[in-house]
Image 1 (cartoon, rainbow, N blue to C red):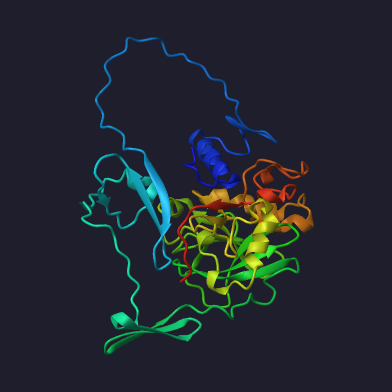
Image 2 (image 1 turned 90 degrees about the vertical axis):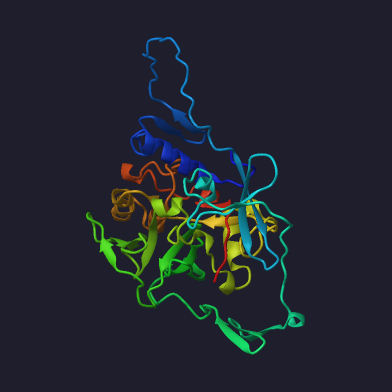
Length: 377
């Protein structure tokens, strides 16, 4: 089912959520799909076949479904990770992907694309001084590239001195590093050592890159007008926690699909990220590097404690949890870690909190090893 890829609990719960939504069900009512604690899921609705038998008519000749495709990953000679898909039979053809694409859906696209037959194998070349190309490292994040009489200086984003503002972290949290991805939004990745939970905080030490609209039900929830990122204004600390990414952006793999694949590679000190990941998922010991990637570079540990939401109302569960008097004070930060309703450890939580995980089994915190291209620029 998963094509031989590493898939954790997050992938399964995401698919169960989609199935429930298609049936008009949810994790609270569980009218059709019930969570069986410690076992899995059970379809509990009554199934009746009241369709009278009818003579079979010849089926209409529809267009054949698209061929099954195999998605794989590789790394170029320059270290860039690439994703590609192989489908069908016969002589090899190269199909150029659309301008905005997700490999999982691209094969079904109606957009006409260029198809060419390769004449020779692709050749990668690293230009050196022998080719008249000189690369000079001016500083940690500054490089000059010269060819002939022309020189260009490339200034990479230097966030090495970024630290969380005063009052934005609790004593139980450790700062992993800053993130500045293609969304144009700066985040601060922090890890709560006692609760074994990750959070993405909005970096408010710089001017906001967008305006925010408060949710209709509470001004504690703010939604970015440009990105669709949803934040919760913490009751106890002066910070905004990322709680939601718009599902439509995640489906098409747009610039606003969330920071899960843009970890702070250039700014991680020592083993801080790997140690945090292994604290949550010790079964990965010996399988990931200090950046959370598999050693072949094809997969990466996905840190996504936020919800992929379709409607604003779905975000209210964070607010209900944060204001609930039934949630123990020391577990309050877990109100902002989204997970499915499986494995609830504390039965005294209010019904509205069934989609929040209380830390009985920290290995299942929502962070999964997932194949994905990643680079921090």
